[in-house]
Image (cartoon, rainbow, N blue to C red; front, side, top):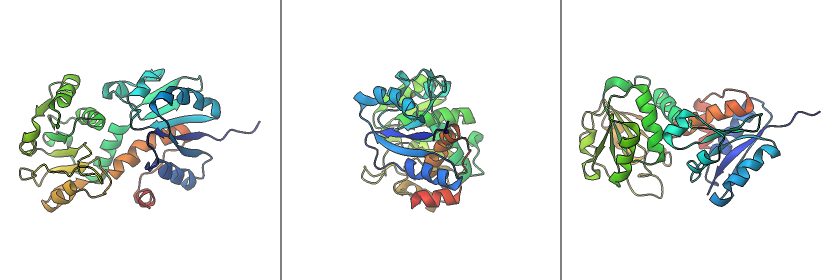
Length: 276
């Protein structure tokens, strides 16, 4: 019997903008592996039916992106502790016994990118300051706590969302009012924009950086544009800056390895290809 060709893909709504098919296609070609990775635009009402049908069509797994990262937890048979803590999953594997296994690799992707882009970064050096309190913030907080950051300050336009994170992640999380966001940067050693502020087509990032230490490492999960206004200003102040593209690349690697059986390298050639 002929060996089946493994299929994977990314499910979201919309999905045409996703760089994931380009990335996985590059790795498949680079390592000479059999397989295909395709984008699938699936609305919320169809999500469960599609997820349950894919294994029958030869799919070994999928990435799940906005707006389905939370909903997938209710469909999966097995949810990792990490995905449960974050309250979202982005990497789904269809196990040989038919079960649907959901994991979240956003936090590990974030940390891998930070360590790659800022090799001298020390989690324990001082507080972290986060802008935003959405799904990405949850993954980043879980990763920073695991890495040993002593204090995580959060400011979000809607304070209640930030308070929810404190309730879920505990006393290391300290909530600041949105109008005080600039003040929370004082003596912060790690600064992360987890919001869409500064992204092409979204509102500008307007938090003043006067209190930012030049010793801080500053990263943005936004990667369009690659160097956001936040990163450009922080770099001019002498900070180490890390762009958001690496997080996308690093969060993709564990799924690729699970589905296609090869651990891909995230290197300059990968970045260059994805940027096109």
